[in-house]
Amino acid sequence: MSAGPAPDAAPGRFPVPAAGPAPVPVPRKRAAFESPAVLAEREAAPPTMRRPIATSLGAVLVMLRVVAGVIWMVAFALSWRPVLSDEFGVEVVPGSEDDQTLTLVLVVILVVAGLGLLVVALFGLAVYRGSNVARLLVMTFTTFSITAAAVDYFTGGEEITVRTTLLTLSLDILVMLALSSRAARAYARRPRPKRRRA
Amino acid sequence: MSGEGSGAIGAEAPPAPRPRRFSVNAVLDGFFFVYAGIAAVWLAWLVFTESFAFGWWGIAFFVAFWVLLAYLVLPRLHRILTTIYVPDYFIGRARTSDGLLGDPVNLAVDGSAEALHAAMLRAGWTRADEITLRTSGRIITSTLTRRSYDEAPVSPLFLFGRQQDAAYQQEVEGNPARRHHVRFWRTPDGWLLPGGRRVDWLAAGTFDRAVGFSLFTLQVTHKIDADTDVERDHIVATVLAANPEARVEVLRDFATGYHSRNGGGDSISTDGDLPVLELDAVPDAAAPPLGAAAAPPVKEPS
Image 1 (cartoon, rainbow over the protein chains, first blue to last red):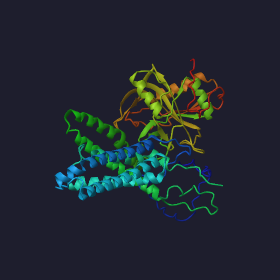
Image 2 (image 1 turned 30 degrees about the vertical axis):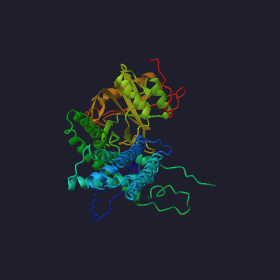
Image 3 (image 1 turned 30 degrees about the horizontal axis):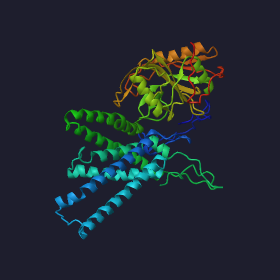
Image 4 (image 1 turned 120 degrees about the horizontal axis):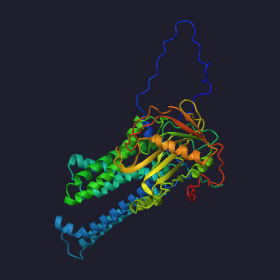
């Protein structure tokens, strides 16, 4: 906010024009609109800020994304053998070496996916506790995910409906909206008392 | 990421760090803010098209579309656009959290926070609660059951880039849709009104006459009475009647030029006078401190 007028702006202080031809003043121009850089400015926040609803909601949505991942893992494990035999024609004798290999592949896929979900869950927890780095990383991931879905949709003509990927896409976009909101930003970037060991 | 350490925080280091011209964090935040807005527009479109594919269930999708549009998409778009086209200095109007122009500033106060609080309580006004999950839930239950909730929170409006410091209200006939309410902002140190008068507080008082749809965001909001002068004079009259020490000075035609709409799209008309309540002489004893948000409501006999 601008302060009041400067104290030396009292009447009688105006400069007396000097004799002779006055210099032609060149008006300083400014753009006729406000600078959009304000959108990127730091939000001022009181030091003792309560967790805003946007931050809690963002963390909850990240956790819902994890839940969606778990559901996907269960569905994947259940459909592993049927899809292999029906779609790809892979027929194995139960108990054979091939059978054990297929089970091993499934376990590896599930472990990798599970670890990934664990990382996402940890990020959700960090967001809830107000970590700025976690907030920015989660938003970066969701940006890539949304962009990929958008590229598919607008170029490849892939349909996005409730029966396909609308649910995960809307979770991603809602996470973006919640975590990029001004309240969530102010909370993640709030001034913290420095913890310093003596 | 560079966020925490940049700029003014590292003050105890002997060679003062040069202030950074921009931070990566801020640029990322600006990008994400706009990108989320665009993605939300797309999502609203997807949900809208989906609402035609499900027969009667499409109505549920249409409601979801409206919620998405009114509470997420339009506020975000307004925020982005108003940041660019609404100047952020004092123009006699508060702004909504979306950056739209809100209620007109139509009252000023000289006096301490305690004196203001004591004067308002004595005049029969109730301090509004802060907005939390608990109070939001209570608004919904009191609206559904038509019960009175006279400390109901008021929506946040912004002046000097800050949410109101305090808000007071009077319910009318126990109906949560109709109420007198006024928000107070402390002016920044050394700040002067246009014209040079120094005041401690600025206030925006309006009368909520009904619940309806906002013109700009399609949200459900209170609709305010267009004649804001009636509410302004009601506040001044109640404070003067209950506080014999209070005085009022009127700045004539302070805001005569402002006849427009508030953030909900309601039109506003005013004669433009700005009363300045002088509360310096009001005793502030016997009133709970202003900072105590959870202060028990003090019921006045008047």
